[in-house]
Image (cartoon, rainbow, N blue to C red; front, side, top):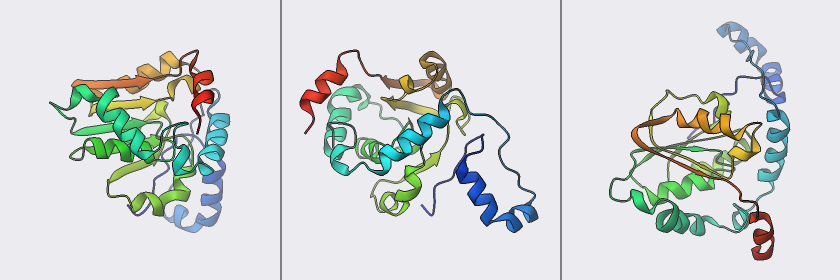
Length: 203
């Protein structure tokens, strides 16, 4: 993995800085900046989670779960029913800093894994992610404009993400389009009582 592509359809400060630094090259290629618009709340969500994940450590990847916990949780509980027919292609939607996608790769080592998130923290972790024994194709992208064909993944996976969007229903519908025929969609959302229980169990 030489780098992580930014595949957003709307302009961010990242695009503006990149364009200023590479104006000659972009002009020669005839490249233009994205012309789309963020969905309601996407800019603030992007800023908030970029800051949060940039400061996360391997001991607080997912509130109470470290990397080994995530592997065990997915292998033994959440995705236990998939071991007889393991997915060949996986899309992790809202992968955070990337460690959850790596955990999925440890659960299904033969799968080709793609992972996207709206936040930019992955760009500061390129070296760390590249050193992983689990190859994952990462990208910065919105779940409402996923850069993949419809019906192209055996497993579309989203843990703790969709409720952070302007519409959980619309987010669900957007990612469901990417599930191949006969494939699986795994979605986990925060329950009403989860925040209190997580506070009590935080290490």
